[in-house]
Amino acid sequence: MTTIKWRILGRKQKMKGNPVNKRYQINGFTLVEMLISLLLGVIVMEGVLSSYSDSSAAYAELQKNTSRNEDGRYALNRIKNDLALAGFYGDFYDETWGGSVVPDPCVLTENAIQAGMTFPVQAFDMGVISVSPISCLTTNDLVDNSDIVVVRRANTTVLGAGVSPVENEIYLQANSSIAEIQTGVAAGFVLGSLLPTNAVNAVGTDAEGNAAIILKKSNNSGASPTIQTMRIAADIRKFHVHIYFVAPCAVPVGGGSNCTGSSDDNGDPVPTLKRLELTSVGGITVMKVVPIARGVDRMEVDFGLDTSDENTVGSGVPNNYTTTPTATDWENVMTAKVSLLMRNVDATAAHSDTKRYSMGLSGFTTATNDSHRRKVYSSTIRLSNMSSRREAAL
Image (cartoon, rainbow, N blue to C red; front, side):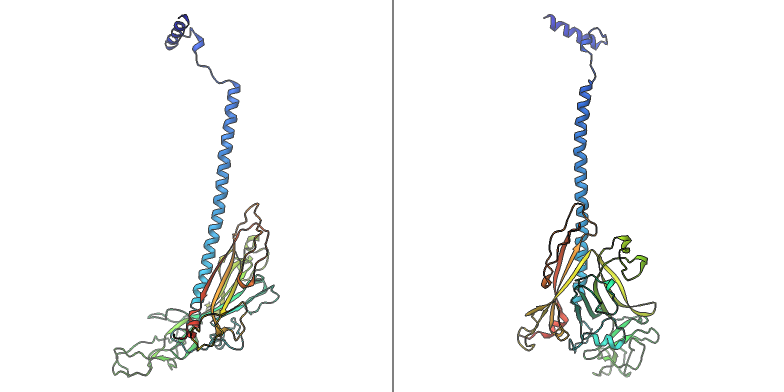
């Protein structure tokens, strides 16, 4: 009972603020307790920092992979869309594909571009490069073992009202049986149109402003008298020649168009898918270099050939595949399978790429053992404007 009383008494005295019984005062931490608390705090903080570091590293890696995926899909879609339109020449349909000699797509005369129209698609199967196969690319612009692909086609839209040809751009004017490559001249250009009467024999000019129209189309709706002969200038479309290749850099030192070496890309060259585009710069017809996607290590293209009799049922379906079509094979090319080996632009510390990647008929790549993660993106594209003309009705 005495003990209980003292405890009660001590508690009451403490509440009154009378420090008679010091036994019941609140004491601070001892040194040992403080050290233990600090140790526990350090352990907890180390766990938090480690978790944050791991999360940051995982997020950074995710960003690298996401960027690679976006670039890979974008690059593949650019090539796919272009190949799907290869051989589209507007109204022109009477074309024989291929030939005995593969043209140089870098020759920019009207005659050379016109001759190249029989090759809507052509490619160069590349190994270790000792010399460039085409005149507008040097060995410094090319990566070993990466193919070069050429696509020729017309624009899907025609020159419309209020739009004149761009000086020295290349255009295609075509009707169903005749196609003509022309160099743009703004002066004197008149767009073909339907007049209320068909009394005038020809309306419009070609892309060069010539009124003596050679190419016309029949369009008499609403005109009187109705005359079925061709009387209106045929549609004019921008003509495209695109050359896809993988360059060893994205941005050459000094801002030029040609890669130079280890100083490119601020001293860290990144292999990049690029294309040469037929266009006019400063009034001069040129092949202009346009970067498409960084981180493309290699491009391989396989072609599906239809070697059967083109008059038999089922013609237009590939029955043979090759990486190296000859000049006479191109008339039989029906499909193209494009494979892009993409790498992360930025390296991953402590990672070593020991994988080998399948690149279609060309086989597997050799492991690089560097610190860049990689992935192959591939797709098979039907060359509709070439294959559809080989189809036989069932």
